[in-house]
Length: 298
Ligand code: SF4
Image (tube, rainbow, N blue to C red; front, side):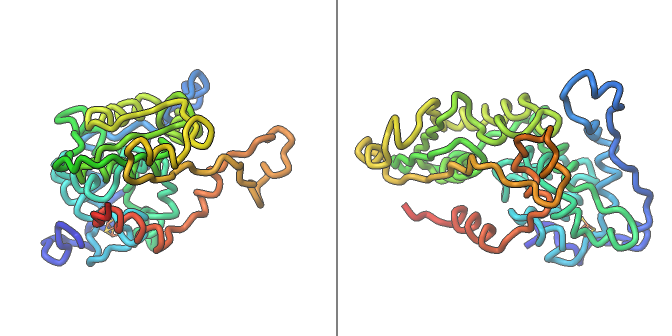
């Protein structure tokens, strides 16, 4: 359900739908060839407000919200952003997403929120992803964000894998008051975010700042610990953990089917991210995340 109900907004939808679209500003190829940094020049506050004000506020449930795997309340965020209420807008994203600064950058928006935006019919969609990243970055640089920690339950949970799944689980559990330790086979936390996504999509600085939020919230991290070799799941229970979440992902490469890369001799090791471009959200994923948020199962 939208925090800002669309039906009560006194706006001229037709006029909004015809407002000019300004595409993302990109760094020039000459500059980009000198580094591996972000291709997109991030929004400034004025640009973000203009872009968010293109949203016509579709009736609840808005198609962009339905298409979002975490059901972000995008129309409400757009309403707050267009008024310059960026920190409040960031709060909307935090309600449903554990990694909004990551999703704003790496989600295949053209297949999800932006792909579902009704403005596609005659115009360009609202740039929801870029606005999400801008909003959460703005919050971090101004007021900062602290994960709200729940009342201590004195129950320990082991999370195996410090990638997006494990981090999402840790975020939700720490907010419910559980004592969380993340075990990771690699030296650094982040999984795919660190070892798979290049800097021009998600910089290591953005990730480092995100990880500091987890550390400040009290999430413990055990690096270089391969569960199955260095420790076992039975051993974790013997150590006093009362539940174990396994989010190890897949280290098996996906084939880049129907792309030139499949037969290109230079592309010896295709990346798994190709599957994300054609991926559609499933109801089971949404149910899984919402169950975890509402559950108090331990
Ligand atoms: S679908 Fe597009 S126009 Fe409609 S609420 Fe979402 S962002 Fe706004």
